[in-house]
Picture 1 (cartoon, rainbow, N blue to C red):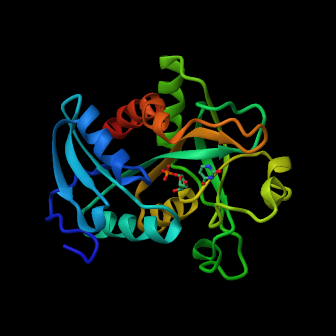
Picture 2 (tube, rainbow, N blue to C red; picture 1 turned 30 degrees about the horizontal axis):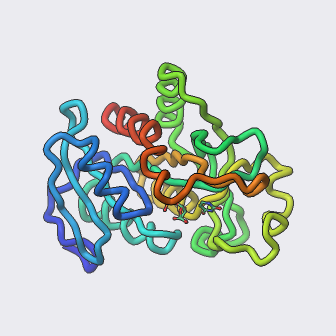
Length: 236
Ligand SMILES: O=P(O)(O)O[C@H]1O[C@H](CO)[C@@H](O)[C@H]1O
Ligand SMILES: O=c1cc[nH]c(=O)[nH]1
Protein backbone atom coordinates (compact mmCIF):
# COMPACT_ATOMS: atom_id res chain seq x y z
CA UNK A 1 0.00 0.00 0.00
CA UNK A 2 1.08 3.58 -0.63
CA UNK A 3 -0.27 7.00 0.39
CA UNK A 4 -2.17 7.12 -2.92
CA UNK A 5 -3.12 3.52 -3.47
CA UNK A 6 -4.59 0.97 -1.05
CA UNK A 7 -4.39 -1.99 -3.45
CA UNK A 8 -2.52 -5.02 -2.16
CA UNK A 9 0.48 -6.67 -3.81
CA UNK A 10 -0.82 -8.70 -6.75
CA UNK A 11 -3.97 -6.62 -7.18
CA UNK A 12 -2.79 -5.14 -10.49
CA UNK A 13 -2.09 -6.98 -13.72
CA UNK A 14 1.29 -6.39 -15.39
CA UNK A 15 -0.54 -4.46 -18.14
CA UNK A 16 -2.27 -1.25 -17.03
CA UNK A 17 -4.31 1.28 -19.00
CA UNK A 18 -4.00 4.88 -17.79
CA UNK A 19 -6.84 7.34 -18.46
CA UNK A 20 -6.60 10.75 -16.83
CA UNK A 21 -10.22 10.72 -15.73
CA UNK A 22 -11.27 8.42 -12.84
CA UNK A 23 -14.76 8.05 -14.35
CA UNK A 24 -13.16 6.90 -17.60
CA UNK A 25 -11.33 4.23 -15.59
CA UNK A 26 -14.69 3.09 -14.15
CA UNK A 27 -16.31 3.15 -17.59
CA UNK A 28 -13.45 1.12 -19.10
CA UNK A 29 -13.62 -1.50 -16.35
CA UNK A 30 -17.41 -1.80 -16.39
CA UNK A 31 -17.76 -1.69 -20.18
CA UNK A 32 -14.83 -3.78 -21.39
CA UNK A 33 -13.41 -5.93 -18.56
CA UNK A 34 -14.68 -9.38 -17.69
CA UNK A 35 -15.12 -9.68 -13.91
CA UNK A 36 -13.91 -6.17 -12.99
CA UNK A 37 -13.05 -5.50 -9.35
CA UNK A 38 -12.17 -2.20 -7.75
CA UNK A 39 -8.62 -2.27 -6.38
CA UNK A 40 -8.07 1.41 -5.55
CA UNK A 41 -10.30 4.33 -4.63
CA UNK A 42 -7.95 6.57 -2.64
CA UNK A 43 -8.79 10.20 -3.59
CA UNK A 44 -11.39 8.69 -5.95
CA UNK A 45 -8.53 8.04 -8.39
CA UNK A 46 -10.09 4.70 -9.32
CA UNK A 47 -8.21 1.53 -10.25
CA UNK A 48 -9.72 -1.79 -11.41
CA UNK A 49 -8.47 -5.22 -12.42
CA UNK A 50 -10.24 -7.81 -14.56
CA UNK A 51 -9.61 -9.65 -17.80
CA UNK A 52 -9.89 -8.74 -21.48
CA UNK A 53 -10.37 -11.67 -23.86
CA UNK A 54 -9.42 -13.89 -20.91
CA UNK A 55 -6.11 -12.15 -20.16
CA UNK A 56 -5.34 -10.10 -17.00
CA UNK A 57 -5.64 -6.33 -17.37
CA UNK A 58 -5.89 -3.30 -15.08
CA UNK A 59 -6.90 0.31 -15.45
CA UNK A 60 -5.76 3.10 -13.12
CA UNK A 61 -6.73 6.76 -13.40
CA UNK A 62 -3.65 9.00 -13.51
CA UNK A 63 -5.32 12.34 -12.76
CA UNK A 64 -4.44 15.39 -14.84
CA UNK A 65 -0.88 16.54 -15.49
CA UNK A 66 2.61 15.11 -15.20
CA UNK A 67 3.03 15.43 -11.39
CA UNK A 68 -0.14 13.40 -10.80
CA UNK A 69 0.59 10.74 -13.42
CA UNK A 70 4.16 10.42 -12.13
CA UNK A 71 2.94 9.41 -8.67
CA UNK A 72 0.59 6.69 -9.93
CA UNK A 73 3.03 5.36 -12.51
CA UNK A 74 6.00 5.33 -10.11
CA UNK A 75 3.95 3.27 -7.65
CA UNK A 76 2.43 0.98 -10.27
CA UNK A 77 5.92 0.06 -11.46
CA UNK A 78 7.78 -0.07 -8.15
CA UNK A 79 5.08 -1.27 -5.72
CA UNK A 80 2.76 -3.27 -7.97
CA UNK A 81 5.01 -4.75 -10.69
CA UNK A 82 3.47 -3.05 -13.75
CA UNK A 83 5.43 -3.81 -16.93
CA UNK A 84 3.26 -2.37 -19.72
CA UNK A 85 1.61 1.02 -19.30
CA UNK A 86 -0.69 2.45 -21.96
CA UNK A 87 -2.17 5.90 -21.50
CA UNK A 88 -5.64 6.24 -23.07
CA UNK A 89 -6.22 9.98 -23.18
CA UNK A 90 -7.85 12.89 -24.91
CA UNK A 91 -5.84 15.57 -26.66
CA UNK A 92 -6.15 18.84 -28.52
CA UNK A 93 -5.30 18.98 -32.23
CA UNK A 94 -2.40 21.13 -33.44
CA UNK A 95 -2.44 20.08 -37.11
CA UNK A 96 -5.28 20.51 -39.62
CA UNK A 97 -4.80 16.98 -40.98
CA UNK A 98 -5.86 15.53 -37.59
CA UNK A 99 -9.67 15.55 -37.34
CA UNK A 100 -11.83 15.40 -34.22
CA UNK A 101 -12.22 11.73 -33.14
CA UNK A 102 -8.98 10.68 -34.92
CA UNK A 103 -6.58 8.58 -32.88
CA UNK A 104 -3.00 9.72 -32.28
CA UNK A 105 -0.23 7.30 -31.39
CA UNK A 106 2.34 9.40 -29.53
CA UNK A 107 5.59 8.16 -31.07
CA UNK A 108 7.41 10.81 -29.03
CA UNK A 109 6.42 13.47 -26.52
CA UNK A 110 7.89 16.96 -26.48
CA UNK A 111 7.36 18.90 -23.26
CA UNK A 112 7.63 22.19 -21.39
CA UNK A 113 7.69 20.30 -18.09
CA UNK A 114 10.50 20.77 -15.60
CA UNK A 115 9.79 17.21 -14.41
CA UNK A 116 11.50 15.96 -17.55
CA UNK A 117 13.77 18.89 -18.38
CA UNK A 118 15.14 19.22 -14.85
CA UNK A 119 16.45 15.67 -14.78
CA UNK A 120 18.96 15.77 -17.62
CA UNK A 121 21.19 18.79 -16.97
CA UNK A 122 22.66 20.05 -20.22
CA UNK A 123 20.79 17.48 -22.30
CA UNK A 124 17.37 17.53 -23.94
CA UNK A 125 16.09 13.99 -23.34
CA UNK A 126 13.71 12.71 -26.05
CA UNK A 127 10.83 10.78 -24.40
CA UNK A 128 9.70 8.05 -26.84
CA UNK A 129 7.15 5.26 -26.97
CA UNK A 130 8.16 1.63 -26.72
CA UNK A 131 8.68 0.58 -30.34
CA UNK A 132 7.04 -2.83 -29.94
CA UNK A 133 3.87 -1.30 -28.48
CA UNK A 134 3.85 1.42 -31.13
CA UNK A 135 4.25 -1.09 -33.96
CA UNK A 136 1.58 -3.36 -32.49
CA UNK A 137 -0.86 -0.43 -32.11
CA UNK A 138 -0.24 0.74 -35.68
CA UNK A 139 -0.68 -2.79 -37.10
CA UNK A 140 -3.85 -3.41 -35.10
CA UNK A 141 -5.31 -0.01 -35.99
CA UNK A 142 -4.69 -0.76 -39.67
CA UNK A 143 -6.34 -4.17 -39.32
CA UNK A 144 -9.38 -2.56 -37.68
CA UNK A 145 -9.59 0.16 -40.36
CA UNK A 146 -9.11 2.80 -37.66
CA UNK A 147 -7.88 6.22 -38.79
CA UNK A 148 -4.79 7.14 -36.83
CA UNK A 149 -1.74 9.43 -36.92
CA UNK A 150 1.62 8.49 -35.41
CA UNK A 151 3.82 11.42 -34.46
CA UNK A 152 5.15 13.89 -31.97
CA UNK A 153 2.80 14.86 -29.11
CA UNK A 154 3.22 17.85 -26.81
CA UNK A 155 2.83 17.09 -23.10
CA UNK A 156 2.24 20.54 -21.66
CA UNK A 157 1.91 21.68 -18.07
CA UNK A 158 -0.38 24.44 -19.32
CA UNK A 159 -3.95 23.81 -20.46
CA UNK A 160 -4.94 27.47 -20.89
CA UNK A 161 -2.18 29.21 -22.82
CA UNK A 162 -2.48 32.99 -22.37
CA UNK A 163 -1.55 33.38 -26.06
CA UNK A 164 -3.93 30.69 -27.33
CA UNK A 165 -2.65 28.77 -30.35
CA UNK A 166 0.34 31.13 -30.60
CA UNK A 167 1.43 29.75 -27.21
CA UNK A 168 2.56 26.58 -29.01
CA UNK A 169 5.12 28.70 -30.88
CA UNK A 170 7.11 26.73 -33.48
CA UNK A 171 5.97 23.26 -32.39
CA UNK A 172 3.16 22.82 -34.98
CA UNK A 173 5.62 23.88 -37.70
CA UNK A 174 7.95 21.11 -36.52
CA UNK A 175 5.38 18.33 -36.88
CA UNK A 176 3.91 18.26 -33.37
CA UNK A 177 0.34 17.12 -34.03
CA UNK A 178 -1.43 17.10 -30.67
CA UNK A 179 -1.30 18.41 -27.11
CA UNK A 180 -2.09 16.63 -23.86
CA UNK A 181 -0.55 16.71 -20.39
CA UNK A 182 1.07 13.38 -19.41
CA UNK A 183 2.88 11.36 -22.11
CA UNK A 184 6.38 12.80 -21.66
CA UNK A 185 6.47 11.95 -17.95
CA UNK A 186 5.10 8.47 -18.66
CA UNK A 187 7.79 7.79 -21.28
CA UNK A 188 10.54 9.17 -19.06
CA UNK A 189 9.53 7.00 -16.09
CA UNK A 190 9.21 3.94 -18.33
CA UNK A 191 12.75 4.56 -19.64
CA UNK A 192 14.09 5.05 -16.11
CA UNK A 193 12.59 1.81 -14.78
CA UNK A 194 12.94 -0.34 -17.92
CA UNK A 195 9.26 -0.97 -18.64
CA UNK A 196 7.15 -0.45 -21.77
CA UNK A 197 4.88 2.54 -22.36
CA UNK A 198 2.70 4.00 -25.07
CA UNK A 199 0.28 6.92 -25.21
CA UNK A 200 -2.80 6.71 -27.40
CA UNK A 201 -5.08 9.74 -27.52
CA UNK A 202 -8.33 10.60 -29.23
CA UNK A 203 -8.37 14.16 -30.54
CA UNK A 204 -11.37 15.80 -28.87
CA UNK A 205 -10.85 19.51 -29.61
CA UNK A 206 -9.07 21.07 -32.56
CA UNK A 207 -7.14 24.17 -31.55
CA UNK A 208 -7.14 25.39 -35.15
CA UNK A 209 -10.83 25.01 -36.13
CA UNK A 210 -12.22 24.98 -32.55
CA UNK A 211 -14.38 21.96 -33.43
CA UNK A 212 -14.81 19.77 -30.34
CA UNK A 213 -16.65 16.79 -28.89
CA UNK A 214 -18.87 17.71 -25.94
CA UNK A 215 -17.83 16.44 -22.52
CA UNK A 216 -20.84 14.06 -22.52
CA UNK A 217 -20.02 12.56 -25.91
CA UNK A 218 -16.33 12.09 -25.18
CA UNK A 219 -16.66 8.78 -23.35
CA UNK A 220 -18.43 6.90 -26.14
CA UNK A 221 -16.17 8.34 -28.83
CA UNK A 222 -13.21 6.79 -27.01
CA UNK A 223 -14.42 3.20 -27.54
CA UNK A 224 -12.21 2.45 -30.59
CA UNK A 225 -9.12 3.78 -28.81
CA UNK A 226 -9.80 1.75 -25.66
CA UNK A 227 -10.36 -1.50 -27.58
CA UNK A 228 -7.13 -0.90 -29.50
CA UNK A 229 -5.20 -0.23 -26.29
CA UNK A 230 -6.65 -3.35 -24.63
CA UNK A 231 -5.66 -5.55 -27.58
CA UNK A 232 -2.11 -4.15 -27.55
CA UNK A 233 -1.76 -4.35 -23.76
CA UNK A 234 -2.71 -7.99 -23.29
CA UNK A 235 -0.37 -9.16 -26.08
CA UNK A 236 2.67 -7.16 -24.88
O1 LIG B 1 -8.56 13.05 -20.97
P1 LIG B 1 -7.26 12.90 -20.20
O2 LIG B 1 -6.75 11.51 -20.23
O3 LIG B 1 -7.38 13.42 -18.78
O4 LIG B 1 -6.18 13.82 -20.96
C1 LIG B 1 -6.27 15.20 -21.24
O5 LIG B 1 -7.36 15.86 -20.60
C2 LIG B 1 -6.90 16.62 -19.45
C3 LIG B 1 -7.14 18.08 -19.71
O6 LIG B 1 -8.48 18.33 -19.98
C4 LIG B 1 -5.41 16.32 -19.33
O7 LIG B 1 -5.21 15.26 -18.42
C5 LIG B 1 -5.05 15.95 -20.75
O8 LIG B 1 -3.88 15.21 -20.90
O1 LIG C 1 -4.39 18.76 -22.69
C1 LIG C 1 -5.31 18.91 -23.48
C2 LIG C 1 -6.31 17.93 -23.67
C3 LIG C 1 -7.32 18.15 -24.55
N1 LIG C 1 -7.32 19.30 -25.24
C4 LIG C 1 -6.38 20.25 -25.06
O2 LIG C 1 -6.42 21.30 -25.70
N2 LIG C 1 -5.39 20.02 -24.19
